[in-house]
Length: 339
Image 1 (cartoon, rainbow, N blue to C red):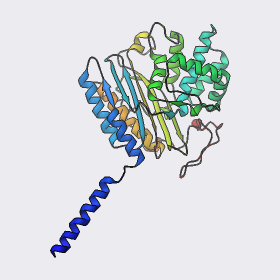
Image 2 (image 1 turned 180 degrees about the horizontal axis):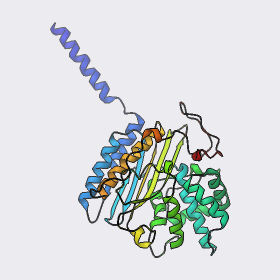
Image 3 (image 1 turned 180 degrees about the vertical axis):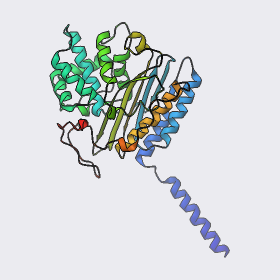
Image 4 (image 1 turned 135 degrees about the vertical axis):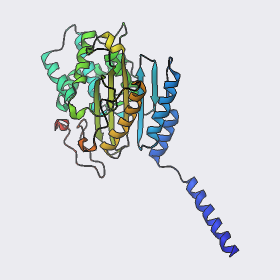
C-alpha cells in the first residue's frame, strides 16, 4: 500500500512539472509580453494613468490575439502605449492616410479639392468604398504618399511594394500620429484649418453599421470621428482595427481649433483574431476602459455592439485570400463594405 501511494505521488509530481514546463501557445506568449509593456503616463493625474494601465492590462489578459493600443488626451496629458513594437496590415484604416495625402496635395498645389477628389474621398471614408480608395491612391501615386508619411513623422508605416494599399504596414503609434494630422493645433500644421475640418467631417459621418470599435463606452455629449478596418488573411487571422478622435462634451459641435484641442485620440490595432466579432469585442472592451477613465463618471451613449450586428464579411481592402476555415471572401475590387 505504501509503495502504491509513493508511486502515485511520483506520477502526480511528474505530471505537474511537465505541465509547468510546457511552452505557452504563441498568441498567449505575445499577449502576456505586450501586457507587461503596457503603460500610461499623465503629467497632471498620475493616479488616472496608473488606473488606466491596470484596466487595459485587465481587459487584454483575458483576450487572445495580438493587440496594440495608443492613446493621447491633451487635456490631462495622458498618453498610453501598448504593444508598440507590433506592426499590422492596415486594412481599411489606410483610407485615412489616403484622404490626408489628397488634402495635402491640394494644399501643395494651392487649390481646393476638385469635384473628382471629393467624389472619391467621401464614399471612401463614409462607406469604406474600395474602388474610390484604389482610384484615389493610384492618382496620388506611391511616391507622393510616401513623402506625405515622412512629413507626418511616421516611423513604422510602409507602403506595399505592389500597390496594395490595404496591405500597408503600420503601428498604433503611427496611426495616432495620422489622427493628429486632423486634430493637431500646432502652428506648423501639416494641413490647414479648412482641410482638417473637412477630414473630420467625413470621419464623423461614417455610416451607422461601421461605427463599432473605439466609440464603445464614450460618454454622452461626446462626438466621435472614426475609421475601422476588418480583413482576414492566411497568416495572423482577422485584422480588426479601430481608430478615432473624440470631442468632449461642452467643447461645442464644430471642428474649430478650440474643439480639436479638447479631443482625445484612441487607436486599437489587432490581429490573430479567430473571427471579426472577437476582434471587435476586444477593441470595444479597451475603448470602454478608456472612456470610463476620461469620462469622469458620465453615462455612456454607446454600448458594446450586439454580436448579431457584426458582419463576418471582410472589408475588401486587399485581394481575396481565404484562410483555413474562414468564409469565402469577395473579389478585391468588389465593394464588400457597402453591402
